[in-house]
Length: 547
Ligand SMILES: O=P(O)(O)OC[C@H]1O[C@H](O)[C@H](O)[C@@H](O)[C@@H]1O
Image (cartoon, rainbow, N blue to C red; front, side, top):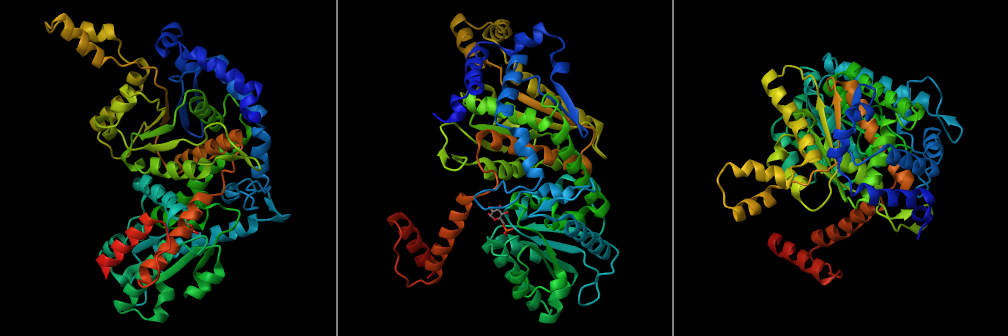
């Protein structure tokens, strides 16, 4: 056993879980009319009702003990202080510096990074203004109205979902198109829909070495030249965000057109850096700044609120409770807001790339589960498909429901229906429906006893399924910033409890490496195939079809 699973806090939680498994949330709600009030907390305009969880005061305090024994506060402070907590890559983890409005310095290797961060923000502000006011023009003198943002992974998903989620705040007059996949269908479709004279390509790649992004940018460049632009005009239509200035200039980007980022910002945490430039172009700089402000406020909350009030701590420890003591292998996110439909995919990357790890500390292979499968989609759509399994399937899937109480320009009837479905689902998951209740419903229909028993058995829902419900007044830029930072810190706390390095991604790196080796064999069609028989066969079939 590892030190974690042997620890008194872990052992205590294991025995508490056995007791809790014999109880039902229904009974807790019946016994305590104040349960909802007792287990609701708010911060940064986000209210979290976590009363529909398999928890008691004793469980909460045991989870807090585990967190404190795992030195979460110390680890959190080390992150904010710029210590090298990404130990396998020997890097600090300072996405929080990108939204630091405290006026305090943030030191990396003894040097304050804030002046560079602020200079970059000013550069973004100026650039966005010059696009929006039409001052920056394309090579034929037309304003730049179409933004083609090329990037993948962290250099894509965060900005894309932020832009989508903030549709009511879009700046009128520019349209942003995000392209990630190397599948040529996407870039072709996007380029076919825009006028090259009005197009600005923003290439986002921290490393400036990611195959998909380089290829899509080359394709866009060829399209631009083919449409009438010249090599000299490229500087007016192509800009980059990267920490690899050398590679970006070698690629042909003008140095002035490169927005910097830094090694101490991980890809999936980079949306707060100039990687967010397409977001600022979508919603304007003031709204973009509010987004950063919201994240900053959540950072402050995370650092200062006591454990029992601390939203990231509450969410993280609840997750650990289900993953490690109830065998939950996945966690579903259910935004009841169409514009937030991309949020599950974003958190999927954030959480699974961060905590999809199996080594704790220096080299201990864990004997406990770590990051869960994160999935989900917008409500109410899922209610008509996969919610069935959450209600009556044999696996436990904790759920996060989220709903803005006000939606700009929304028809009241639609919004009330949306809300009723959201609340009704959390209720159904919690209370379920007993065999007796199902039978009583059916009795009036004149069924025989056998039929009654059978159908009532099928209709019975055990309930006792945990969920969190997040409410916010409206999903404005500030609240979105806070919401994203909340999940970032949740992931941090869980990683810190499990002792994994939440900031590297060696599994992803291996995929890139092998993909390049295979590409070599697809391009050099005469090269001998020396992989396993299955991979060789797949390559041979591709060669044959494309020969
Ligand atoms: O920004 P780039 O260097 O192009 O990297 C893009 C993405 O590449 C990899 O897949 C990493 O796992 C991601 O975290 C990263 O965001």
